[in-house]
Length: 150
Image (tube, rainbow, N blue to C red; front, side, top):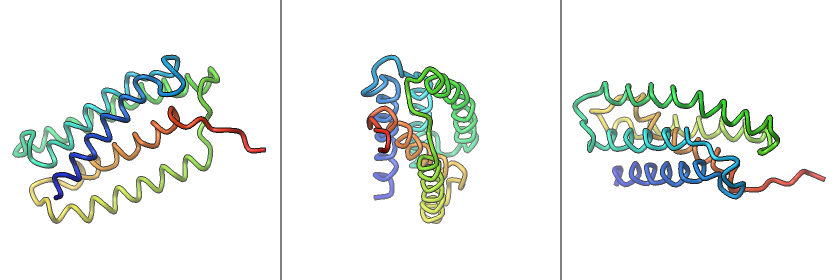
């Protein structure tokens, strides 16, 4: 049952990476290929957590986390370029609050799952849960066309 949770998170990562890579409803002008790298790393991390990808080597999980953090910087810079060009709306307080809530939920879920996975450290579990959830938040910027409040 727990393995299926992480498989679903991996599938969410793939779907969100596809939306972010293609640009969603905004088209190729808002395509950010760095999210595909982050999504691929998220899938590998989820496979590591459930014990499919070399579970005896914990260094792999930390290397994947380091690469994901490293590729999130160019992804963020590309997102900022979309905001500056007026292609996407800048995130506001609502989006910031959404990210904070997703981070809190991820940490709570990881602490709940951690005792059931004694061979996996807490850091990789948090990263395996938080990455797909944050990808959902960012994929929503490509799927939902926000309207200004009147």
